[in-house]
Amino acid sequence: MGVKCCQPGVRVPAGTKHILTLVFAAAFLTGCGGSGGDVNTSPFNSNPSANGSWTGSIGFHTSPFPTIVDMFIVQTGTNISARLVQLTGFGLCSPLASMTGEVIGDNLTMTMILSSNNATTLTAKLGASTISGTFTTSGSCDGGDQGDFSLSLVPSITSTQWSGNITPVTGQAIPLTASITEDQAGILTGSVSLSGEAAPCDSPITVTGQIAGRYISLIDSQGLLNAFGKVDSTGKNISDESASGTCVPTPGSFAGFSMTRP
Image (cartoon, rainbow, N blue to C red; front, side):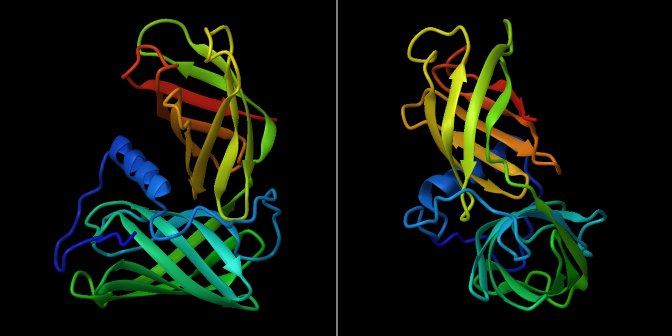
């Protein structure tokens, strides 16, 4: 879909985490300009390419603090792209963008499109688990800005050994176990089981979702469980977000959500 990220000259303040996760989920469900089909469903295999989930910061001078950048880069040959780039900070032209670029050896260029006439061009060196370099902006919003940026690779979250809890606002925590596979397009597939719950919540709940930098979504097509979280730098801990659905007490409310793996 064509996301109109901002109007010329208008800055969008940083949203709350619930707003960002709902936008993130909507982008996954609609494809955000890319297709959810015809993707490589093999587990993500770390290699010295740009393919994978990346998080880091960029030093826009419109903000007193570094802006956090989250994206999943898909590499095909020398071409790279990210259908969803999430920006978290102050004084932004838009909290969302898309990205296209190219990798030649360890030299990487990216263009983040924030709207039809606002873009950020990044030139960087690609390492095994790092991307770092400089940026320049163009357009009517913040054209002419320049500075540094850096990204770090988030390890694959593919594992059959996830465990954790859903913590309702009232009542006891619900233990859970999960199996998740991350493919080379950032698509997540798997199942979640809630211990001690009544049917159908006691059986493995099939989920699909997406990862982009730190942000993940796990969504059940029947409305049993919709979970959103953030992955830490090790790829072994997911926390700081929420779950909802008919299997989450009280239906219609949000509960805490966290998982970890060996």
